[in-house]
Amino acid sequence: MSENDSVKRKSSKKKRKNKKKIILISILSVLAIFIATAWGYYNHIRNKIYVEYKPENKKEVSYNEVDGITNVLLIGTDGRTLDEPARSDSIIIATLDNNNKKVKLTSIMRDTLVDIPEYGENKINAAFAFGSSEEDDKGKLKGAEGGAALLMDTIEQNFDLHLDKYIIVNFWGFEAIIDQIGGIEVDIKDYEIDEVNKYIGEATGVNSPPITETGLQKVNGQQALSYARIRYVGNGNFERGERQSKVLHEVAKKLKEVNPLKYVGIANTLSEQVKTNIDIPEALNLAYTIYKLPSLDFEQLQIPQTELIARDNLYKDRGWCLLIDFEQNSKVLHDFIFNNKLPNPEEFDLLAVENVAAAYNAEEARYNSMYNIRPEEYDDKNKDVIPDPTPDKDVVKPPANGGNGINNPPANGGNETTKPPANGGNGTTNPPASGGNGTTNPPASGGNETTKPPVNGGNETTPPTNGENNNGNVNNAEKPQGEKPNQ
Image 1 (tube, helix red, strand yellow):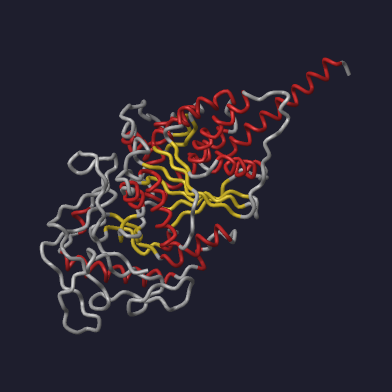
Image 2 (image 1 turned 180 degrees about the vertical axis):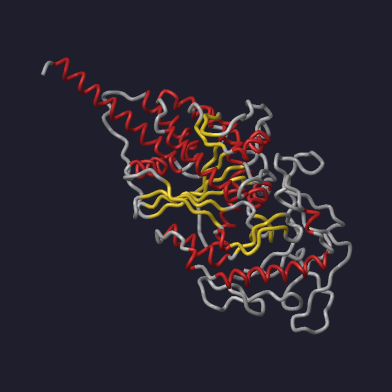
């Protein structure tokens, strides 16, 4: 072999090694569109290292596989920037299961009614809004970090799943990465066209061409985002989750084909659209672990499971909600993530679901009667977080043992109510951590419930979606003064 051939071979080997480093980072994107956007920032930094590489510096960056199971909360917000209060439009738990060599995606439906720590009963997508609207000890909005923290706490409190890693991306980040990779292909059905076109331009204010035909077609970032956000056709939020998963999968496939020369451009575009608490070394190790997996196909789960929804309709003053069996849905979630077990509907306890529905019905009847609530008045599809009712007089606390009621409004705004259990019963005890018959229904009237006193004559606001309060001024959202389920 000639000296020139040897030099060429060494040069080619070095290029392949450097390209592999870049690929390792890009593999992080297969977790989801959110990790893909975060990866852009990491890769931007890594590219700088690559450019400054000196031949005499032979020390290589080492990557290590991540042991066991790693969960990352992926959050898509409906804000234009990450600095303004916003709701979480998409909530996905990405699981890297290196025990079983696979990646799993669990989508939590945004209309699921939960207990938000310190805020009480509300849809789960309100948690990010409330957290991002809070102020720190210096009076500064906590923003995306505060939203992620409260959402993780909410998931832990309701599903007994601890999360400590997150990646957040807003609408512009979603659009930008798809545009940077040249668009993706989606299969649009006839009943989806009008809904896709309705959302186009809503987030950015700039309209892309409308979708005019059905079938498999290439779409840009804005069109893909609109497709992923469709909610009110087909099978509603269930089909919406499927659309989001399809988009994630298409983005992951396309990112594997991206020319490395586009990496810096992607990073620059997304640097202001993504926030994460995952540091670069850990991200690279996650990327390397995924790179070593035999397959990049995702396993998918949706929470709640269809059969484990007690009610799917208007509830109290909260608008359209999913009222679920928390105990059984939590078990499904844990089995999927930690036991590598897919749900089997034949194993579900449907009688327990009926008991949960009955408990919700009883609680709603009590609540609506007490506050003169007409749920249909809160059926606003443009609002996802509904303000609490504001009665103009103190309410009476139901007696604990069926005796005479006494005026006893709670000291802190009345954040106490009962949470419907998984398996029914009588009384007001909390649902057990796993299975059993110890879970009991809240009473329809009477019992250890605390009712809510009037709140300032009705001056409550909903969490802002674009950093504005109801008067159009930038402000943090007020805490709802509603009733808080027992835990």
